[in-house]
Amino acid sequence: MSARIYSPAKTAMQSGRAKTGRWLLEFEPQERRAIDPLMGYTSSSDMTSQVRLWFDTKDEAIAFAKREGLAYRVFEPKEQTRRTISYADNFRYDRKTPWTH
Image 1: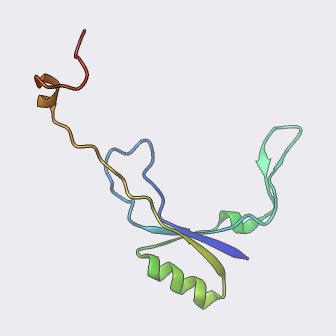
Image 2: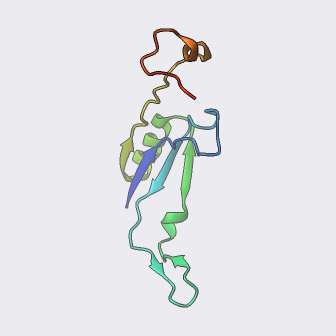
């Protein structure tokens, strides 16, 4: 049984970065999900897919996986690059692209 350790990205509904610094340990799926032909539900008999463990730091998650004897992979979060521009840049005389209406 192997596990993934990662820090989830913020959701599309978030504008800030609150609750994004925590680390999550999830188990890899052991079998494929199946679609119920009658109702169309997606289901699986894999109970480990429902287990999600949250940790404050990456080291705590790794220590837990080692203590429990779990094989694990760590996925580092991608750093967010923010383009800093100001509203006054819209009115600069040396704009690279012309501003037309």
